[in-house]
Image 1: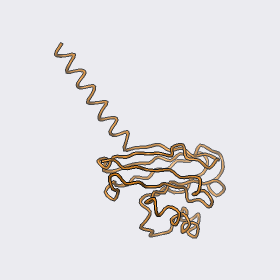
Image 2: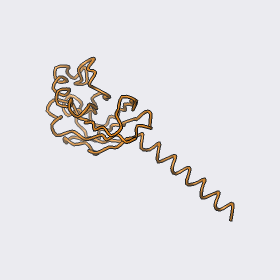
Image 3: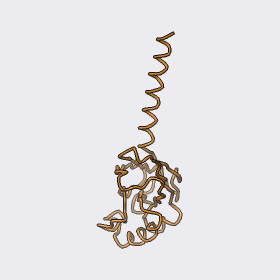
Length: 150
């Protein structure tokens, strides 16, 4: 009986540890339509680092229907996307040195994947952040919310 209890406790620890790791790594898909597969995310500040894996499941090239994942404070999202337009495709539609960009992937096209890792240090527990695609015209419909837990 003691072996059974210890085995269950050990398995519970493994499952709990895996769940904590999984919550710090998230997969998001985009395609040839203007949508993120996930529009609500929650990360724990205790993650330390978060990784977003972006996969373009469509067929169109990055110059035609490219997508990225750009994280900002909710109040900065529209202006960051607007300033990104002038930066152009060569800069992934993200203005160089824009301190309001908390994390950003490169622009990808059909069949491509990319990732971005960022520290939760700059995020506030209980805070609300917005992620958008800054490809021209996409940011008004391609957006989601990243909530930060303790």
